[in-house]
Amino acid sequence: MAPDFLVTHSGGFHADELLSSVILTHLFPAARLVRSRAPQWMTPADDRIIYDVGGAYDPAAGIFDHHQRGAPLRDDGQPFSSFGLIWRQFGRNYLEALGVPASDIDALHASFDLGFVLPVDLMDNGAVSPSVAGVLGKLTLPVLLETLKPVFDEREPDADDRAFQDALAIARSFVEASIRQGAAKLRAESIVLHAIAAAGSERVLELPMGMPFRPAIVKAGADQLLFVVHPRETDWCVTGIRRASDGFELRADLPKAWAGLSGADLAAVCGVADATFCHNGRFIAAAKTREAIMEMARIAVAVASAAGA
Image 1: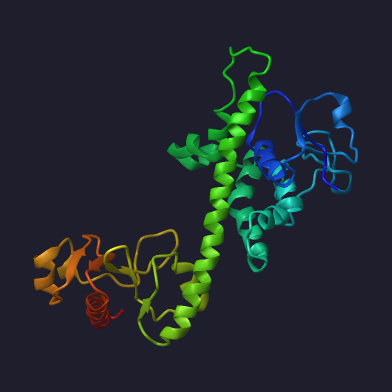
Image 2: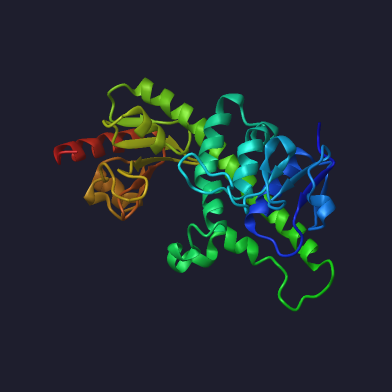
C-alpha cells in the first residue's frame, strides 16, 4: 500500500535526504512530504516512510536511518547514507516508473549506485572529503546542493522548507538526467555490439549515428578496431578510439599530415576530394559523404598499420 507520508528531518538539509526525496516523491506523488523532528513523526507506522532520521533501519517497518550504532553497511564494508538505503530498497521501482526497459533495470540500478549514489553516501558519512576533488571540490553535487540552504540570517520560519522544495526540483533534474544518460548508454551498447558483430575483422566500425561506443568495444574485446565512422547532421566523421576511459591516448591517431587542415588543403593532402576537416589533435576528421569518410578511414588504417598499430 502506498504511504500517506514521507517523513524526514526538519532544519538544514543534506544531499542524502534530498536525493532520497527525489526517488520517493516520484514513486508516491500523492504522499505528503513531512519535515519534522517531532517524536510522533519518528514512530514507524503503516502510513509512512521515514528516512535519514529515527535511529533505526528496518525496511519492513518503513524506516531508513543510518546515523545509529550498527547502521547497515554495503557488502564491501562501505557505509550507506539514507540515499543509498532508499536506492537499495526503491531504486528498481523508480527505474521502472521512469520507463527503463526491464532488461536494463538491474544493470542501470548497479551503475547508478556505483557512480552516483555511492559518492553521496561516502561524503555524507565523512568517508571521503570534497577536498579529494582538488580545486573542483566546491563543485561536487553534494556541496552544490547544500549551497541552496538558507543563509544564517535568513530567519523566516519557513525558510528551510522553502529552500528544500527549491533544491528538490534541482536535485530531481540531476537524478533524472543521469538516469537518462545511463539508459542511453545501455541502448548504445546494444547497437554497437551488433555493429561489431557485423564488422567481423574490419578495423573500422561503422555506426548509424553518434553514440557512446568505447565501453561496448572493450566489452566485446574488439581490439582490432582502430576507428569509428558515423553520420552527423550534415556530414560524416571518423573518430579514434581511446585506449583507456580516463585518458586521451588513442589506439591510432589520424595521419600526422592531416593535422589542423580543412577544405581544399586537407583534400589535397589526403587525396579525398570531399574531405573537409581534421582536428589538430588528430582524433577526429570529417567529410561530406559516406564514401569520402570511408576512404579517409581506409587511408588512416593503412598509415597506422604501417606504423605498427
